[in-house]
Image 1 (cartoon, rainbow, N blue to C red):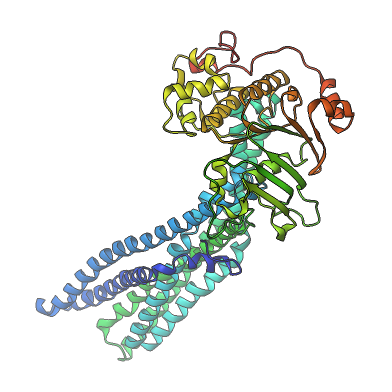
Image 2: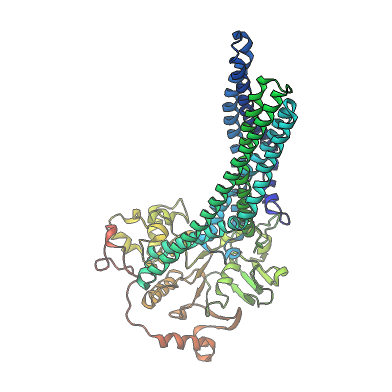
Length: 621
């Protein structure tokens, strides 16, 4: 599970590495040894050059020569080992954090993520989670290594010449503390705006690509405006990134200035000490070159501060999703449901509210009673926002009647409380065919086999026949091996819905929930699809959630929702004769009017080497 809430986001990210402290300490030691080798190489080289200028016997130089070689090799070896270990730590933390994020999202989806847009969620899952590794690689490691190497270098220089050690300490404080603090203050707002700006660009890009692929944006003439929005988001992100780069350049310049002044001060102090006889002339080069090498340790710190701020912003966005209230409480010891059938399935006085909803707002669904027995079909109708989809979420246990959020009532399957069972076990009995059912960028065959991987060819064609797709698929050059495109982009809206229905029928759920299957379709297509849906589900326990009333005389009961409440229910004929809310909805639907039977939408485009609209085999038998 992710680190518990109530602590700072950076503390929670660090907690993800609690089992890797030894490896992190090893990486820190290796990083410090790599930089100390660089300092030792420079200091030893300075002494060696000065001593060699006196042309002593070669044996007098062998220790320094050997040390120079050792420091040169050690610097590369220690740096390589440090990179291996530190990246291993960071990637292990990242892998664990990503697993925690996905497990949490699995519990939140879909009811707990209703307000999070797809592009924004994608950014949080990918870019923001990836950014968290920088806490270890580009903040904690550089700071710890700089502190270790800086103290060692100051102590060594002060041992040679105390005033030079003091000058080095002052320079390191300026370059390693004051400059990063200044940089952090200047870039705080910029870095915190970076992740949201990246998210806005991702949201608009995903919306543009999805709308263009579906044809919605070109048809409605909104393509150019959406392109401008993407360009504006990209320009905003570029401006923010440019400001961040300017802060980095300023910090680099100030750090270089501090380094130059410190080296100059060390050279002047060393020269005076040599003239005064306080310092051996052979050590003057060491006193000058040691500060020059030491500043390599503090050079990354201003940018490390920027990365820390960036990681903090990314962590806040990630934990904002992870800390969202869980819509379903899973029992620690789930109770098994009856193994034969879930009937009768009962909802009694069910009242549910979304966990992130306004407490002052009424529940999304209130006091609903429903009983399903084998073969019973119920239609649930109402305007948008009336609670229809909430009912589907509750039946699949995407949402529970949590008393803490104002929920109440009971949900039982064959007398066993659904709340005490594993939600996945409930979904073995109650299946969903949603209005936005996802189709993978694969073949018709593979999309169908998601429901039942071991299905043979005859089973696939039987499901297609029930969804009235068999004639159309048989007329395709590649048949079941036809590729559907990303999100089913090569299919029409009606074809996508029928394929989703065939997949749901193939899964053979005891209870099938159809959530707005005719949404976003034209009237002839929607009515044709509704008629075929009712025919395909005859004899199957079904809950049809729809805004279309055409053909509902075939179901056993119609429930009318308004504002989350049942305002009317009964058989089709009773509701029509009652002249109540259902009759008003039916009259309003008939006033819109439509003509023609039509099939369920245009066929695959001719560019896909499949039949065009004029020659496509009709989808309905």
